[in-house]
Image (cartoon, rainbow, N blue to C red; front, side, top):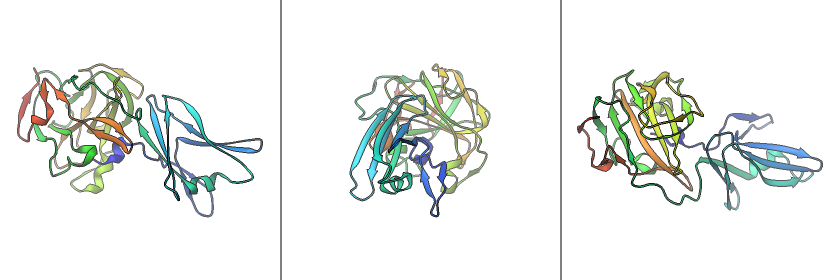
Amino acid sequence: MNKSLLHLCVFMSLILGCSKKISKPSFIDFKVDKDSIYVILNNKLNCPLYVKLVNRRSKKMIFKQLHAKQESVILSYPNTDTDSISILKTYQFLGYYGQYPFESYDTNHVYELPFQKGYKSSIIQGYDSDFSHNGSFSAKTLNFDMKVGDTVVAARDGLVVKIMIDKYKQGTTKKYRNDGNHIMVYHQDNTFSQYVHLKQYGNLVEVGDTIKANQPIALSGFTGWTTIPHLHFGVYKPTDNGLASIPILIDTLEAKTLNRGDVIIKE
């Protein structure tokens, strides 16, 4: 999976008008008040967000933590000295899910299998596999064989913080990596889980919903970078460069022991 599925990284949705277009992250606002210009961080998510501010020349970094729906001023200047375009040329703003620095998480929590009781599935890809489960973001994730339209359930209680569900393309090359419909869930120990390759408009929950383990949340699909229909599932912790996948216990098993071809039936 591509990091752009899980990381907020720079929210490049708003373009400022100028002779040379400069991209402004959607979590950044500028406010001019009297003789000053302020750079305001605006967390529109219903979970924590932390921002890494990098000076493009000196490479000096500043970290700023925001709670859910919080705004905070991070920089201010006399507006006679600079403007918003100059600030964006000077600094890179990177936004990431979660609370940082990350302290600890519940390593003993047992996750539910992400499908309904009685469902039979097999492992398509396990931890640290060569095809796509490598690198810090994807190494500790699992692929479960699931047919298109089958019900995906929550593996743990949490809060729905992101849904991308309007994609319909599928392919076997990396150019389709951003076409995988997915749901992101925030957990009380500052970890996140993600469910990927969902059916177009197959969500059964909405952003802001509080969900319970085993609650139906989506329909499995065949979207994004994949060779066959399946569900990609992973759990993540925040780091200074975004989310990284972590090993978990699932259905009383250490997920790292699950290998390609292993058959699982949810009791």
